[in-house]
Image (tube, rainbow, N blue to C red; front, side, top):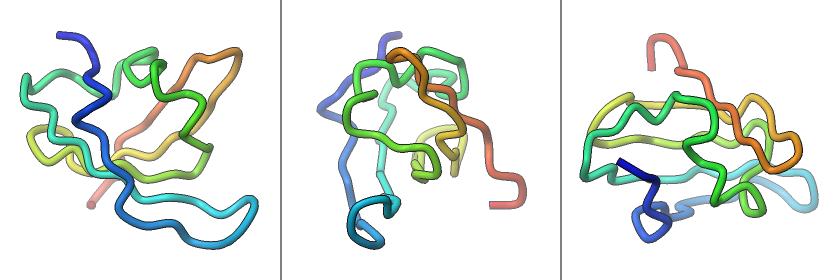
Length: 79
């Protein structure tokens, strides 16, 4: 299924300017959120280094790249 913006909530922000954020994603459809392009609709809000907790699936993922509106995330091992 497609990304649902209303299921992504920023929970914390660590610092000013170039700080990173912690996000919570409910993922009610249990999608594969580690697929490139999955979070593209939130590209203007996310930053490289942000952490997203996918409560219904992948666990923690980190934003590893954002280029031309394409968001790439990677699973955080052991998290």
